[in-house]
Length: 195
Image (cartoon, rainbow, N blue to C red):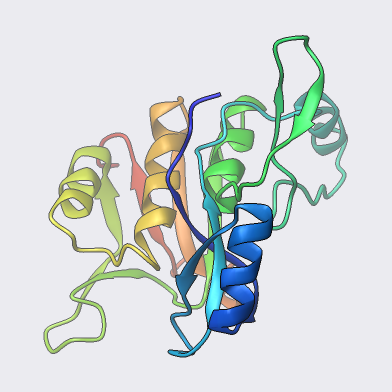
């Protein structure tokens, strides 16, 4: 297995002494907490998912009219070792990328990401903020590459939406959870602009 850079903070906050002790005893990596300047949190890799176990069962349940809750945060990433045994790995798989992969793998037409804003924006929170309601794949990618979307907030969601479109999905929608039923809300990303 390739060694990945540990970037994702997990678990509780430790003091410097506790972090040093755990680093020496268990080989864990730590970064200073973003919220607590005197605290330290463990960091683990966050690789992109490559497959979803039980996707066939999930698809069967969904196509039978069931609401299926799957691929959320907190799942346990696994891999097959050289002997073919399923093993856990200390990592965090991004929930948006996992959901995007699952949606594509089961042949969903649309992929929704529910968040706390009704649209995605250019210059979010700044004077001149601009709502981006309709985007095609190439314009979305251009915005992503120029840094329009915050790396710690909206960028992972945008990457997941693009991943779904790349894998053959028709439309990705990002909107506020309370606005889901109202089709006048939500940023829609498609391969090409809809006429």
